[in-house]
Amino acid sequence: MTSSVHWLLGNKTGSAKENDERIYRDMLDAIVEHRLVPGTRLPEDALAEVFGISRTGIRKVLQRLALEHLVTIRPNRGAHVTQPTPKEAQDILGARQLIEPALMPFVAERMDQAALKPLRKLIEQERQAQAKGLQSQAIQLSARFHVQLIALAGNAVLTEQLVQLITRSSLIIAVYGSRHSVGCDCGDHGELLDVLEERDGKQAQVWMHQHLGRIRSSLFMEEQKLPEPDFHAIFNRPLST
Image 1: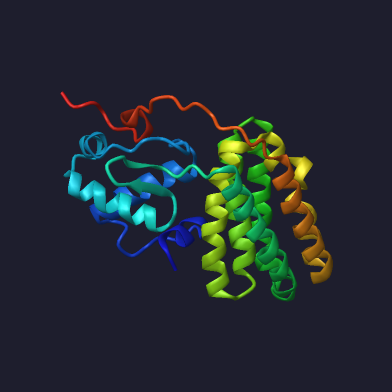
Image 2: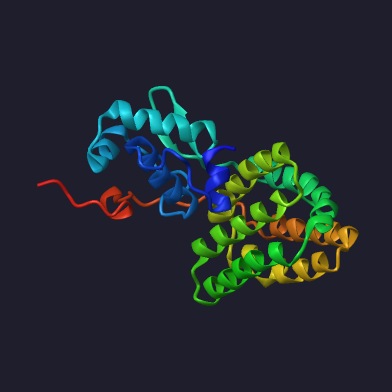
């Protein structure tokens, strides 16, 4: 599985102690948690200074993130956090709406109390984040819920493909969404688990299709003006003296 799959499933990688892996994970977390918002420029010199490594080392991390569609690198323009266009946003969510519901019958077949417990915990954390107005945290928890849910279908290839779509959807909701995009207006994930607990794969498929459709409808396709990021604050690194 890719590193983003392991991250969303809550797993650790064997090379997590290595410096380049740590920096990669720091940047991955900052993007997925929306501390680095879509469209943010990622200058190699500034990031190299923050992490205390060479520009070559940062370039490797950025190239790795670009392979996962989280960073876009353009010749002579450098790197920035990927900011999907309105059409790309609809295409990505449309792809999820085709694939994700189709996996629900397989998830229903494998659903048991051991699988339900961590999913219900994620839902409770998501509800708490929404209640506190922590939109970015709620988006992140929602993404983890969807990934851990579809992983139960037992199809590793589709899980890996959907992880990329779900991660990119998180960026889309950060750019174009509102509290309604991850709130009750798009359906409480607890409703889906109740259906899956009954092993009703067909109804779960209908629920997921409608859920993703409501998210698509909730997006407000207007790009934002981005502030200049403070990388030292984002990555909790002291200024050099």
